Length: 241
Ligand SMILES: [Zn+2]
Image (cartoon, rainbow, N blue to C red; front, top):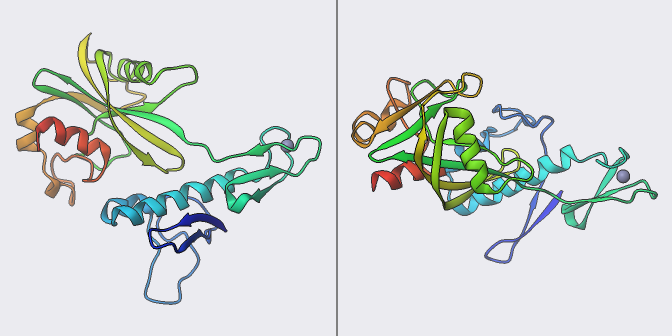
């Protein structure tokens, strides 16, 4: 059990991990004895009230951290939950290391060139979904360098004017998405086949007329990531919607 804190009404909120696995697959929890079912948070987060989604994201990130931190990263000895579940203590008295939950920074960026936006596809996505580029920050990098490197590595495009544009927790399992806008400043579009399925420039008019949420199911045309995601917001802001 992890104590998450007090909600707005002062009620203590706890997280209890009932799962045997930590996959993204629905139905991975224990059998439910009433008319209810397990669903993946990732699939429903955008449909929940923001406060509930935030609590569930927090609970998910911290329970996965416990699951993955059962042994000390310094000496390999077992660890034990302390401080209401916000620290794990190494049980080897010679080591005594304390481990805290971490958050890994990832960058997500909207690259534009005049009236065009650079979108890409991942092989794992539903056919027809396109989105802005994203990637993890590497050790020793500034966020702006991470944006420029990811865009260059994945598409061959050089960027300038990298500007912060907001953030979104991404507890899948433990990231925060840091959003940026950037301007294309050179290079030739050459999508990296190991990283992307495809990358293309789309005009504003194309995005406005060809992309539609109704294409999502069944996948029958072009569509953007779900409403509520920061990737969607980056595109919507550019469209002026
Ligand atoms: Zn240790």
